[in-house]
Image 1 (tube, rainbow, N blue to C red):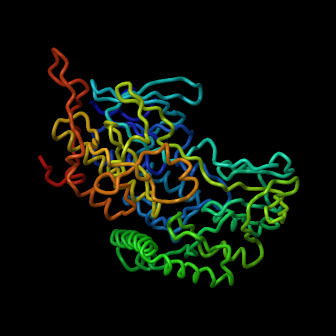
Image 2 (cartoon, rainbow, N blue to C red):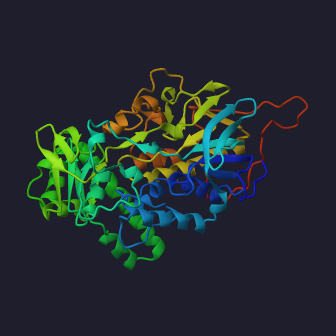
Image 3 (cartoon, rainbow, N blue to C red):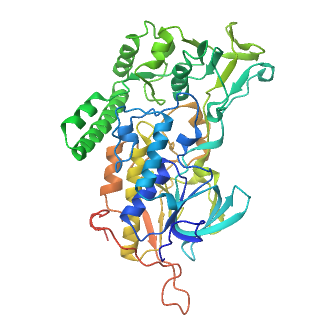
Length: 519
């Protein structure tokens, strides 16, 4: 296909259509633009701005719970003083990335993907979009369909039904939709939840509100960790910029990897290490001593121990109990205690949806995501010319985005070299699959397990949480895997070339090379 010039409206046809303009979509677009400059692509985004998570969440204190040396892209190193950054800083970083690499003309906001249909006869997807400004429907055809939608519902968060919530005379708010005009100064605030949102929100409100109470049903692990990486900053002063970038990122990845490995191999030791970091500020850890092992659920990070300091100073407190009902003036607990509140924040989790809730079919047969098995955690069995980005649960999301974008380019290179039009992961062993899409036990993940794809225990079917393993299989192992079925579109009668066949784009020498392919 002839390359489509960026800009203007959504092009009617492209080689690759990317859905989502957050970290995943921007990262994938960079790889396509730099490694395959002749490939036409577009990024469609339902919202009116880029950034995904970092544009959506606006609650006080919103920040990363992964360090920016790994949450930042490999191709755009994070060089600021603090390794952990607030939401506005991360959003600014994403805007810089888009502008520095000329990606803004490829962005098309206000276009929600509602359906996608693959035709084996043409080897192409027909994707249906709905323009949010006027509800107009339009279609785009593409050879490859890439989902960078993340995994949760942008329309609403998860809030359980609380008896008596209509009786409460104060304000109830979910962090996913924080009102711009909500002023908590001098008010009694109760935050329901003990996950990453609560851990970042409470220190931001402490000292502003009269008092903040974290109300949790059960404890979570919280790691106090320095906001500034002094070793990284020292390396930047001592080494040339490019060398420092490589060393800092490598060390940060290794640290995350070893921390996770230690927690799984020696959970009691890791639990004691977490307790030591916390009890240096708080004398008692009764509210931070979970019954499960570290990393059975995602570990929360309190930068510079800010949550612990807020509790130690009395600006915040923790209550571990179950909610009986909301009252006009607060929350009644099953223990008989009542917590008075002016504002209740339901930091109770997210609603999860696979691949943006897009209705997908292959040759008219609807795709049931739960019946699909992941292939190298980036493609799905039975779904042709489709890939997705899904980050790690035990490390930075972006580490996987960089690997997935690189692998996509290698895959497209191989298809062009061999004259293939369609690639489909195929698993002939009915015993493969059925495993979890993720390896955490958090309730918000369990609630949605039956709508997400499954994984296998080994080989290309596993959903690994290991950057080093993924780096090998996505960047180094041959693309021509026995689990992939490559095909060519049949030539129509009287035609000199297959329907839908595009000319191979010019290659950037050395940037996306693959090992010799198996025959």
